[in-house]
Image (cartoon, rainbow, N blue to C red; front, side, top):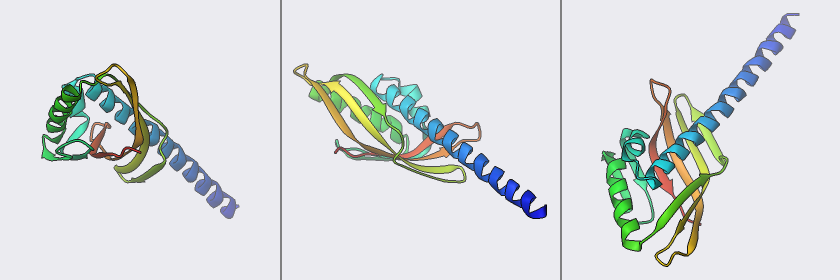
Length: 154
């Protein structure tokens, strides 16, 4: 009987752990989606509040690396300049399900496939596809915040 109780507790613990991981996966994906929607929608307040105070962002346009206090705001300024220069418009981003998800306490490492759809300067529909890697942390308020973000185009 004692062994049966131990097995039952172990199974329940595993099921609860898997359910929490699944919830965290969806929560982190939703946080990433909200951040990207804010970026392409020029919602600076939401974009900036999606990141920790000291964060790091890597992307394929100059200056390629933004870090420290205000990194998200600096990135958005560079993004807006890049987009204006290229005359890109009509952005939409869509994340797929995680291809890698490692949670350690309040921190999570996650890789999400992303498609960034837009129109180029000639009004031609374009897609950039590639993985976006995040390190996120769960705040005291229960919100997932991005500590770092890296986009890699295929």
